[in-house]
Each structure stands twice: as structure tokens, then as C-alpha cells.
Length: 311
Image (cartoon, rainbow, N blue to C red; front, side):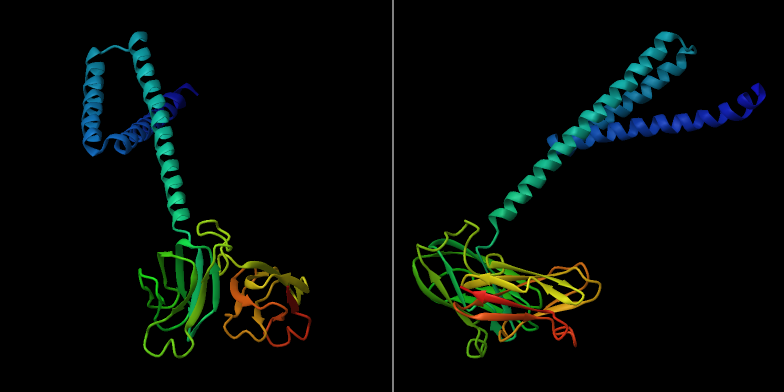
């Protein structure tokens, strides 16, 4: 056993232990350097890296030249190792803190750019034919779900012309809009004449811009959620106020389902594979009852139908 320990075990453990020590030292020093780079820039990091490398080099040279392994020397090495580990943890905390700050800044920026109104363009039309919001700085996003390019101009309102050149393209702009009724439209030749226009009502009684409660668009419609199982829609009866309604098709079944709004050709059919929950928006008219159904052959007849009553 002693011979195995001296000839096999110790020669094996020494390089493994050395690799572990090197890994710990490199990892923790790297954390410190990364934290310094975040706080002080690359020049400081370079200077500190040179100092640390020189200290390690001369420190081990001095230790090797001593030719002895006294308890004092081992204690000094242990203290140095512990300090490196502690510094590594401090560096890691600093990196994590900076990362958290970046995440919060990104969230704040996203919240600041959140649109008050979303207008969806398809070929050839706008899903939202009438939108309502309070006066002020209004952020509008145009989404293109069609196959051709579209624009969005608000008649009588200066500012950026939105342009969505391809399928799933988005563009966003902010406009200072006073109370009144405006027309928005696509100014590509022939598109407005084909029906690509809508009405924007700016009224002090409507939700203010930035409140998150503006009427209109996919981000602001009254919710109408349908759970699609095999083969049924739940619930069968829904209600919503007049205006934009955001429909969600939540497929809890094991096969693909769709959702079509009967009599609303501007509403883009929702298609959901198992586990998916796509959404779409349409403008519901007061006093109307809309029929939602799955148009996969045989599914509507099997019971995949629901009714939305608009108050």
C-alpha cells in the first residue's frame, strides 16, 4: 500500500492538485479584472494584470529560492490564496451588480419605448380602423403582417413617416397630437384607395399616452382568451366592451387549431400548434355578436365555436 501511494497516488494527485489551484487562482483573478474593466476601463485592467503577474512570478521565484518549506512560508501562501479567493468573490459580486444595472436600464428603455397604439398592416388594409387616445406625446408602432411594403402617415400631424418594408417588419414613432380627429393611411400609390386608412380620435376623456390603458392596437385591446382543447373551445360565451379586442388562442390540446372571427376579414387567422398562444386584435362594434371558430376541417362541426357579445 505504501509503495502504491508513493509511486501512483501521490504522482497522480500532485498535478491534479496543481491544476485545481491554478484554476481557482485564474478564475478569481479573472473576476477581479473583469470587475475593474467595468468600473475603470481597459488601461487600469492592463496595469493591474501586469502587477499581479509580476507579483506571482517573483513571489514563486523567491519561494523556490528559499529551499525550505517552513510553516511560516506555507502560512503565507495560504493567506495569499485565501485573499485571492475573497477578491474573486468581491469581483463576482461587482460584475453581478453591474449586470443587474444593465438589465434594469434595458427594462427602463423598453418601457419608455412601449407603444401607446399598435397598428397592424396587411395586404391591403389596416386591422385597426378606429383608435382612440388622449392628447399629448403618443407613441405609435406599425407592424406589417403582409407580404408587401407599407407606410403610415397621420394626416395633419408632423413627424416621422413609419415604414415597414417586409413581412413582420416593425417601425415606431412618437408624435405630439392635440385633441381632434385625424386620418392615418398608407401613402404608397394605390394603397389608401384600396382601403389602407383609419381614424384616430384624440379626446381628453380617453386614456392618456403612457398610461398603458390606451384604446386600440394589439397592446391595448380588451382581452378575450379562448382555450382550445381537442375538440372544443372554452369558454363558449364571452363579453367585451365596444372597441379594440385582443383575442388569444391558447392551444391546450395535442393537435393544431385555428381561430377565425366570422365576418371580420381584417382579422388575421390565428394558428396555434400545441402549447402555443398567438394573439390578434380587431375592433368590435357595439351590439354585435361575433363568432369565433376553428376552420380546420371538421373541428367547427365538432364544437370548436364560441360567441363574443359586445356591450
